[in-house]
Image (tube, rainbow, N blue to C red; front, top):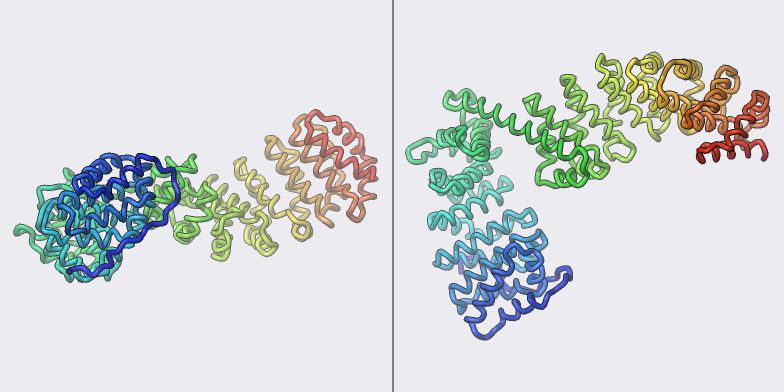
Length: 608
């Protein structure tokens, strides 16, 4: 026996599903004592499972696979029956990944490899087609191809049998060549000599699979690359064959794969980078490849911009995150921009920030990209960074430790409003629920002058994000008191200027919320209580026509007069004298329930 595999098959354990009587009937027929009826049963089963995943799953649950494998391996089975069994198994393999797992668990791979010893070509092709389907699945352990050392040479010997054997075997090789060890095994068993002639096959599928084989064999492999450079195909150097396959009249997939082969050979030193036969063509096709990658990244960015399910599908596509990350360091600026756009689109997903972005340490190449890039790339990269700095992102901590604060503070000084917004926005996200050390570092690095310059920025978005930063810095009492003790005078001055100037409702609401935070501090609230001008402003906004401003101002008063804090009685008395109680009483009758409830809560402090 050529292959030393364990071929006994045990029953499978798979999830219970609805099992139809029809499905059971198909399986029962496999056990009929009449061989002709068994054959007809397998043929009927073949017709029933085509394109029907539910039927496939039912048959697997009912134990069809062990019986089919048994019939396939029996020398007493007719060749036609064995072939039909291989076809049905191939069809079952084209279902879900769970189907593939079930087939692999039933030892389908050794059974099919054993079948390749049969001299009948049609049976061999059926076994190879099924093996191809199983091996191209990401859930199949590729190492199973290399378990027995006699398998690879036998597959090599079958390459000459037909175009179908050539297509299936080369496809199996290209999918199962994942490591330098795999490359060595295939190389030592004559992969180059056996596969090279297939590059001139009349079948496009054979040519394409052969080309893919060479791309995985040559990848970061000097030995293979150095051998390839001397190979002749019909009297023509292999490198020239690759150049011909890169011509614009060839399908794009072929052009790009041939370009890969030449690139790997160049990197290995097998072809000089200035070789006149390829340099112009590589330049031309590299540009074409860049355009294709740029278009692909743009498309993914657009698809994922507003749809969580699509974002999930993009990140779950095999090697997609690796491709996007590598795109961030492409030589082409347009590809880098498209890749970071794609990343930005995906970063809108909470789930992806917690999983794919963390698993691939996306923040590292992103930070590198931010060091030295044109403004258009900087804008998109910093916008993505804002999302990576959100509270629930696991990337936030390592980004903080990488010294990002200085970089973001420098962005806030940019002439570009978009970069100023992103710089301050990222700092705002960073300051949310941060510890005191981070907040102090932000204030130190940004500097009070720059902070207050941003508070008078002509761009409303910059102003809003700066107010958001200030609001996040001034949260939790010890932080509020610490920052206000150092910068209270300037902050109160900035708040006054904003409340007096012509600004929209959102700006003034955010400013009043900052004031409410200050009013929550133990010592910081005195900066409001000793500032009669500020108290009059709060009183004015409590009577404003806009509910949002009334609510924010009422929050501020509520924090100032809270009973459980030292000095509350004196503060209550002062505000009563200034007419605040009358306004609060009026607001308890407000039509907006949130506002009336907040006013009632404040009034209770006077009644307690």
